[in-house]
Length: 622
Image (cartoon, rainbow, N blue to C red; front, side, top):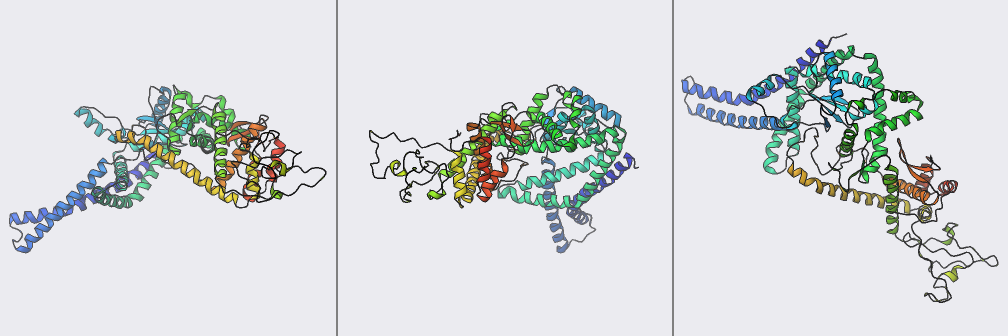
C-alpha cells in the first residue's frame, strides 16, 4: 500500500509541470524583448553592424517587444484580477458552531494536517475543500506590513464546505468518518508548489469566464485575446492538473485510513441514501412551492422525514431509521433552525432562481402549513389556468348523442322526446355551459327560442345562473373532442411559458438595483445575479401533455376536496398528495393518463364513483 507521502510527491511533480507551462508562457512573452535588448546592446557596444538592415531589424524587434509586453501585461492583469469561481454556501462562524469546529480540529490533529480555516454549508450532498484566499472572496483585510509578509510565507488553509443534508441525517460519528478524507486534503493543499499550481489554473479559468462575459467592442476585442490565451494554457496543463488532483485525493485517502475506517463504510452508505432523499425532496416537494413563490424553510429537517419514510417503504433501507436514536450531527450547531433556514433559501436560489431575500412574493412556508398553503393553492391555480385555456378555445357544438348522461334531458315516459335542432343548440363552452333541464320539462319548453319569447314571464321560473367550473366539463371536452387534448396542451404550455417569463422579468427588476450596488461576490455566497436564473435547474421543461395531465389531476383533486371530503396532504417522497379518509390515494395517475392520452374517460369516471366525487358540482378556484 502506498504511503500518503508518495501521493504528495506525485502531486508535486504534476504541480511543477503546470508551473513549467506558466514559465514557458512567460518566456515566450519575453522573447521579443530579449531579442530587442540584444540588438540594441550590440549596436551600443559596436559588436553589431550599423547598416540600414540592422537598424530596421532593431526597430522591428523593439516594436514586437513593446507589443508582446503589452499583451503579456494585459493577460497577467486579467488573470490576477479575475474572480475565481466560488461555490455558493452559507458561512458558519465558530461562535455559531463551536462543537463542529472542535470536531474538525480534533480530526485534523489526529490526521496531523492543518485544520481548515473556516467551515461553510452548501445545499448539496457533497463535501470538499475550497481555496478562498483570493481577495474578492473574503472581507477586506487590514494588516501591517510584517503581518502581510508573514501571510505570504504561510498560505491560508482552505475552507471546509459540508453538505447541509449530512448534518441533519448523519450521526456525529458518521460525520467524523465522512469528513476524515476531506480534512486530510489540507496537508497537500498547504504545499507551496501545489497551491501555486492551483491558483494558476483557477486564475486561467476565471479569465476565460471574464472573456465570455465581455460586452462592447472596446472590451470584447482585448478580452477575446485573453480568453484564447487562457484556453490555450488550460489545454496545455489540463492533463497535469487532473493527475495532480487525483494524486492529492489518493494521498488524503491513504492518510485517512487510520481514522474510523470501519465507520467510513457505513457513512458512505448514508451518503447514497441522503442523496436519494434530497433529490426527491427538492424535485417533488420543494419545486412546487418554489413555483408558487413560497420556499420551504426547513429543507434539511425534511430530509430526515423523507429518508425515514423511505426506510419504512423500502426494505433495502430498513434499519437506517433506527439510527435516529443516536445524536445527530446538527446538534453540533448552536442554532440549527436558523442555519437550516439560510441553507433552504440558498437552495431555492440555486435550483429555482428565487430572490436573495424573502419578500411579499417570496415568503417562507413551514411543513405544517404546506398542505393548505402550497398543495391546495397549487391545485386550484392549475385548475383555474385549465379553465382559462378551455374558455378561450373555439366553441365546439357536440351532438346530443355525444353528451354525457348527466347532461342529457330525461325523456317523458309517454312520448319520445324530439331531437334538438343542432342550429339552435347552445355551444358547449367552458365559460357558459348549456344549462341542464329538469326531468319533467322538455328541451323545447326550456329553450327560449322554442315557440315562446326569450324574456321571462310572470308564470315562468327565473332562469338558473350558469354553473361554475366543473370537472364534468373538462372530462366531456377531452373525451369527446379528439383535437381538444393537443390544443389544450399547446395552449397550457404557452400560458405557463408566459407566466415564467413574467416572473423572470420581475425577479430581474428586483435584483437589478442590488446588482448595481454590489461590487464583487459576497463572502460565503458566491452568486452573481444573472437575471434570477437558476444555476442548476432541477427539471427540464415539461411537455404539453405532461402539463395537461398535471392540470387535469389538479382539477380532479379540487373536485374531491370540495365534494367528497378529501384533503390536501404532503408525501415526503412524492410531494402533493390527495388524502381520502386520512389515507393517501396514489391510484389517480393511470385514469388521468387514460383520459389525456387516449381520450378514454371511463377509468376516471369509475375512480370518481369509487371515491364519491361529484363531477357536476362547481369547484372553488383561485
